[in-house]
Every structure is written in C-alpha cells, then in structure tokens.
Length: 478
Ligand code: 5AD
Ligand code: SF4
Image (tube, rainbow, N blue to C red; front, side, top):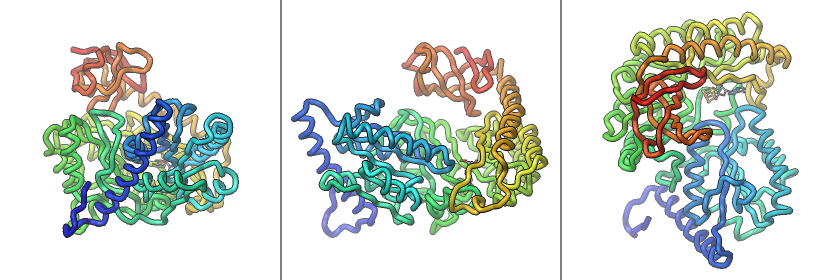
C-alpha cells in the first residue's frame, strides 16, 4: 500500500503499511537465502483450539508466505515454527510444553537457526511467560492475541538480535484490516465479526486472554464477504465468542439478526454458518432471521454447558434449563428439521449426581446431532478455580462415560433419521483414507461421505443418504 502525503489515513492503515514494509525487508533476506542455498525457507504452522485460532493462523500463514517462507506439513524440516496456542483447558497447555521439549532437541541437533514462535491465548497469562523465561529459553518470539498483525515486525526484530522477543499486550488497541491471508479451504472461509468476550462464565479463561467484546462494522464485514464471494467462496462462517451480542458496542448499533440478513444478500455466497451463540442472548428476532434467510444453514450450535439450573447459576450463564429448552422449542417450531449441537462440561465444582442427571435430561430432550463434551478443567484466575467443592476425578470420569452412553445413541438416531433423504452436500475435500470418496457437509452440518472426483470440490452436490455411521453419513450421488 502506498501512502500519499496529505491524505487522511486511518491509524490501522498506517500500521498495515508498516508491517508490509517489514514483510518486504524479510523477503529480501529470505530471497538471498534461497539464492545461496537453492531452497526456500519453510514454515510449519499449528493452530490449537477453536475456529478463531484456526482463522488467526490463516492470517499468520499469509504473512509468513509474503515474507518468502513456504509452508510445510513436516515440522522436522521447518525453519520457522509457529504454534497458535489455546488455554481453554489444561491439556492444551500441556501439549505445548511437550512440543517445546522436542523443539529444544530439534534446535540443538538439527537446525540451530530455526525460529520458534508462540502466540495466542496461552501467551496472555503471566504464569506461562514466567515458565517460558525460566525453562524454555530456546523460544524466539512470543506474542499474544491482540497484536497478531505485528508478526512481521517481531520476526524482523528477532533476525536482528539474538534475544527472545516478547510482545504481549494487556488489551486490544486496534483492528488492522486487510492482512495477507492463506485460506485453508478455497471455497469456504471464516469471517471474524467480533473479538473478545464480556460474559465471564465462571470456568472460562477466554475473557481474560481475548479481552473485552468489540464488533467489526457491518460495512467492513460485508466488504470482506463480497471479496470472498468474488474469489469463489460459497460458504462463510461468521465467527465470534458470542455472536448474539454482535453490534451492541458499535457507534450505530446493529443486531446479529440484521447482520445475517445483510450477509444473506451477498451475491455468490450460497451458505452462511455462524458460531457461537450464547443461549442468554438468543433473540426471537434471530430465530426469525435464520428461518427467513434462505442461505443461513438450518443448524444451531447452542452450548448448554450443564442441564442444572443451579450449576448454570454458578457458571454465571444467565439462563436456566427451562429457558434453554424454550429456545430449542422455538427454533424447532420456526425451522422444523433444524439440527442442534452443543458444548457440555462435566464435573464443574459442586456438581451433584442430581445436577448431572439434569444434563442427561437436556441431552435426551434436545436430541443433539453432535456435542462437544469436556471434563471441567481448573483455570487459574477464573472464579471457579477457587470454588471449594471440586468434584473428585474418578466421579467426573464415571459421569463423563455415562454421559457418552446417553449421548452417542441419540447422535446415532438423529443421523439415522436422515437415511433415505436427498441432501445438498457441499463437497469440501477428498477423503484422506480413500481418494475416490469426497467428504462434505449438508446444510444441517452433518458430515457426508460419497463417491466423487476431485473436480467436484467446491460444488453443491445432490446426494441420497444410504447409510449411517453415527458421526457421519454415507451417500450416493443422484
Ligand atoms: N473446562 C472445561 N471446558 C471448558 N470450556 C471452556 N472453559 C472450560 C473449562 N475450564 C468449554 C466450554 C466452551 C468450550 C469452547 O470449551 O464448553 O463452550
Ligand atoms: Fe468463555 Fe462464556 Fe465467553 Fe464462551 S461466553 S468464551 S464460555 S466466557
């Protein structure tokens, strides 16, 4: 981007221009490396955790590519390794420390010039930074969730010095638009509609590491969706920690339902999905918009977390079992055949057998097509971490198994109901196991495997469902 003297430029545009200049400088160095060594430097990028991180990593990868690195799937041949970390549960963090142990060896023995970068949610915690400073000094670049766009500057700084570059911000400053990006799928794309979270569910670390809620303007969002459509994208996933509170903090407030209607008008886009919807903010207006917008998929991810109203109160969720089930009822009434999925936490502090039974009740009543199930993980700094009545591990794992015994047969039944139906499946990928099979999703988000060829990827294919494998369906083209 060129900046001309005298034009009014937004600070975010200036910032983008600065980063593009760093990209150019690094590219010169990497080109010189290529000339001297007959190969390009390679980067390996790993996104852990949620869709938000996966999408952030697309931007990190886009910047690295512009810097003259080429992507590799093979970590042990990479010159630049970047992990976009998650800290929602403890096991995500343990995985990073495990990998850092391996990387120490990699740097010592295989590639002393390799650059290791860590970013994302885990890095926003002071205890993690202390551990890195003490035990993992072979890490080169550390940054957080608020300054992702600064990657080029941080890489340039590291190339000039032999010290670890730490750049962690405590809060959000500005959204830098139009970063280079490598999209993981050519025909479907994620679009951030908002960042951060204001809900402070008592178990959750996200508000502490991703900051307060802020929405992008509908103009920026629609411009991005139009650009994606022009680029051949047919399906967009609108991303936010709680899309139902979208737009409340804008200068000209816009509701999520209104935004959905605007995206529905964009020519070329055929399907619209979104996540995540907090039940406390799910309005009748949104249900109506979902029902009326032909491109909006009839599928709703509606995290319940627990079926016990008392546990929900302790979780600071601001809804009850009854009000949750009322939303389910309304959604089904407005959109017969809609599929629902959810997130469930087992073993929140103070959860009794009776509370747990309430969760099983909700599973039976809501009849989810899929559910993301988690064992409660204590996160330092959250209110739940200091609650005294933590549930013993053996009790939690017994409940977890009993929950799957209730959930999986329901998931199977809900999939079984689809057998014999004809569905439009958006062909996304060639199956990793069998190159004559394509995988894709139906409007209702169910995964479908069917025979096909690579040239069909990116198309909407009518498929008759002939078999049910519980977590996915088998179809044949008609
Ligand atoms: N322990 C277990 N699961 C958690 N989640 C968030 N925080 C925790 C935690 N401390 C789950 C919630 C959320 C999903 C993204 O992760 O179910 O919806
Ligand atoms: Fe975490 Fe609750 Fe915000 Fe979701 S809504 S990110 S669970 S605090």
